[in-house]
Image (cartoon, rainbow, N blue to C red; front, side):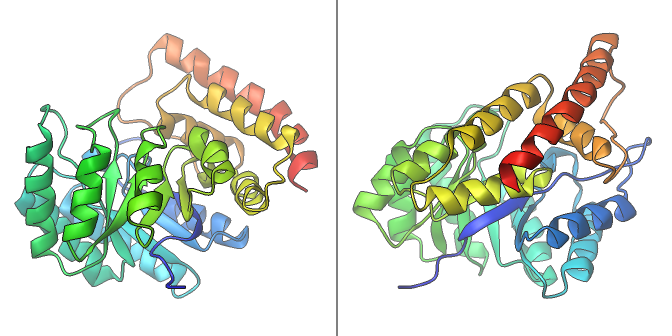
Length: 299
């Protein structure tokens, strides 16, 4: 059987920044080391969890220099190349390829609503310009959704579009690819959809934001789910964490948890309101008890 581009658990990584919004290279290095030491062997850089709209091309070069240096053969990485046009997307793709990325994650441009023929036209233009394996990145919460039939068309007709990371929460596209194009790489990008995807045998891999802070939970769920033996306790732990995480924008919540774990100081793209500051404090307090209980489940 041909090995697919993403198999098993990849961690979607936050982009640590200092209080002035500048990239924290030391924070990123520490976070990557933390995850590698806990068995993560695949990473997604500069995706939604990494707040890719904030990343300039020059910053991506610096990020990937750190990533390449820290991983140095210990793990592989994919890179998100989200941008508003083909030219910028391809520039980011070239940077990622030069840095040694295993492949690229390609979202649809954000802000404006696009029709499906726009989506297909954009993806074809990028795919024709970049000589690297590409996973479509379906992120309908923030961009135009890539419909299942559009996905099937692109994977079937574009040689270097090799599958999809589907963060929609729906399993329709993964089911269609399993049935019509089984050689395509099917990656779950929404942690809440992972249990159902594993139960149906739909997931070659998962690119997980939760794995950025709780790698053992997602690794255990993926490994056990493939054998159909995910415990109720593990399912409950994932559900509890996602519900708590959803009280803040996901990257913010992951940074709060990362700070609670002692990985890196949390920072945000603009000052927190009083309500958000209270939520931050409540999440930190909640996590202290949750993490103690989780240790017994994943040990």
